[in-house]
Image (cartoon, rainbow, N blue to C red; front, top):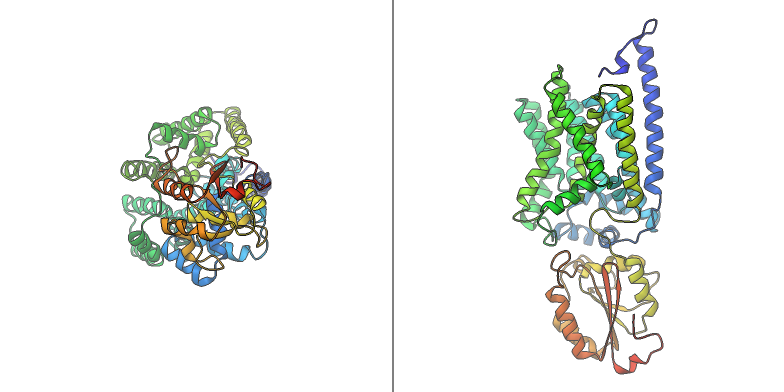
Length: 509
């Protein structure tokens, strides 16, 4: 399909038509950007902070010594996001405000994917892809979390944009921008290395390895070296809870990635990609064929690679694949463009948007990836029912982080695990409570609260050995065990017989 900006109508100059196209695109992208902002701000504080969001805020609030120590010991992934979140927290602390940083990155991806589509295909493909991203439920869902994923998507788009420009015009400026965007993407999320591997393999397959490109990749490796060293020496983190991918996990992945509207929307995307593949050999433009092949390689190679690796150790989690949204949406946009008549193209776009809107509406109430815990309610319950002298133990020490976000003042139970100082340090992110500590509580505290989270051997499996040990020790030391269940969080209270008559304890938490 020819780009309207390159067609001169009788009596009009090319520059006049180009100017009109720029104005039209500017209006469309502005409207889509405003709509994207509205959709990503809607219900922004409706859901509780979950475990990872609490950890993000706690890391960003650490002093520089502890901040650098926790990055080097455990949380090097998303380093860039934590660095940006630090000054952001100086301006506000509410759930909505903290999450607004991710909203900014999510909204910025709309014009970014337009320019990528315009660079790879044409302006119309860029507009369609921007429209699809605007209402994509998965992107909106993660744009409403205090995590790095929308920044990861934005930088993946920018890295690919400058990568493609550098292949066309390998100027020093384009190559430098590619280095910057690529390195920042790696520091936004480890999985950006897969995108860089795709880019590297592509120029190798195309025989485009020049001295300039070699220098470019050398600088990327040098600047990313600290993260590579971290992965080799420390590992990718505690990922044992991620299930090995089978058909059920792949089905959920496809449904979420395409927009949470079930198999009708998945089918639409599949049909669009099939159309692109059918027309792949029929396109006379070598440049267009190369763009499609690159997008197909970008979309499918990481999925296949991680799926195979995950049969040994699973890394197959939907949110890690958010950087595959750009190729998916661009291929769908190109498939729509290949349809024969304007009416069929409009109908296809309306179907995509209508189903995406349906998926978006349900995503505000339900999580699309890992279900979040209700730390808001669990923390409020403990704080409302705690008495002076109570102790508080977290099964997973990092569970203290979302709890502290909801602690409105210094009152409340005394945190004994984790506790290495009056303020949170890097050590409070590591380890689990031990038997010796638990046995010592009975002589110091009349009541002990225990917060259980992330205490299953795997999603949907039985509690782990630490949970059994905590219950065993405290049942031997205290007369009563009270339990309250919240979404993803269980709260236990252990007390002596004298505390059982306390009017604040009803017998059922």
